[in-house]
Image (spheres, rainbow, N blue to C red):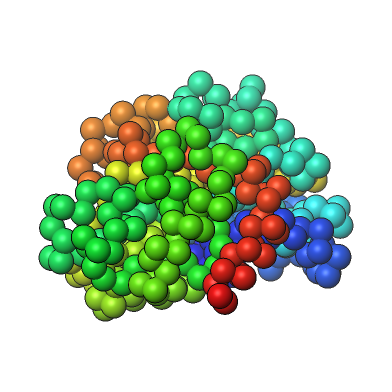
Length: 354
């Protein structure tokens, strides 16, 4: 599963973890050959293309540099799959020292080793990125993007996405359920960000009904980018990296709306039973150093998680970097989604077929 396809399924995977564990075998990852060496780190990463290359950027700016500084070897296993992580933990045969996960993974103590904050400097992180079982890797976003040539500067709020009378045209939205669309519907209907959760589902679906005939559904990150690049939609709710690729690579006359954007983060974790956990903490400390985060962020649209990196003038130039628009940031309540996903999915699927 590539990084972009995984985003579609990530909440569902978290919710159906028990079923997955029952159906999956206890095999190891293909990149685990170095996991047992006392002087090596095996990293489970996303893989797949994202902008200039998420994994390539990790290898260049983080893994290679820190392997040299710490005098250790590293192996990258990909593409990341939550079911593989849980199967390995359940079997007691974990091949990875560190894993790069999204914000819907990393809160269950039974699955994780605690971060050693005698090794990792918690004070360098901004906000809540230094947690007991995970530390922030990068800041990402689900955003509204719109056709500048069609709408100009008048398309300046989340409400405009749901106003097809004033701003006519098709709207691209994800076919598969994950956090973002329901939140945007409520925000456009006047719900304050601090009052979003628990989501008022009746109100959200009523708002979606107002534009249902104008919706075009995308299934993957690539298909969302194609909708934008082809001009089939006038506006779309997509992952930021795909909007950025459509603009920078495909030349789409679109821009990103940062009036309100849904925050999605990545985290570094150490899975329960990981080999070389002490070395893993040293590696996490190294790859989250602010200067490395600045170098990393300069080659991709995502933002850093350390205070010093966030304040770096080197990262101020990219107008589509989410951390340059923190005033519009909307945090997702991951625990609420995990607790309610099955019921919401049933309602979503019924709504889709009505």
